Image 1: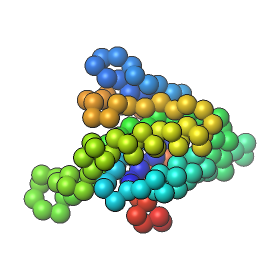
Image 2: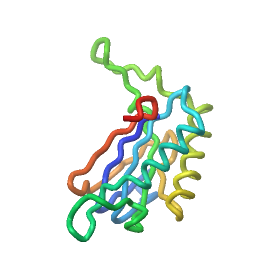
Image 3: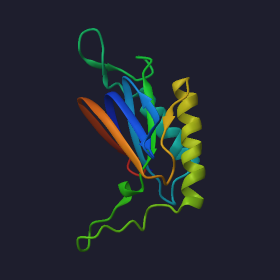
Image 4: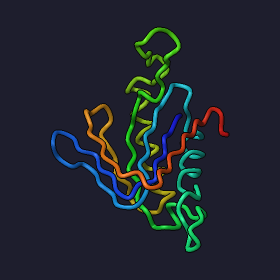
Length: 150
């Protein structure tokens, strides 16, 4: 599972011209799911995300988490995070899971993040054509892959 984590001042997901989810200060998460991903990956990744100390404390040092700040989260599924660009100029998405595998894992990720954050999160809709807007704060952008856990 790959995640792009962006600290934001605000973010929203619009589907069909209507705002589906929006947050103020918090995290916009883009997540790509592959067949090898498990519930253990979800639990580890969710715990890591809500506890990442990437928000400023009173001294201006990145020492607090989204949970510490009572921030918000929007989670968006994005299969293109598993793009392979090894050959040619057309990316291959062969590693990205098909919906029958990805949807249950995405839904589990929503449940896990909600539990770990202690409040509901915003989402996109799996497979929908979404317009995602954000105001990246910092900018702070972190990429995590559960297969390398660096």
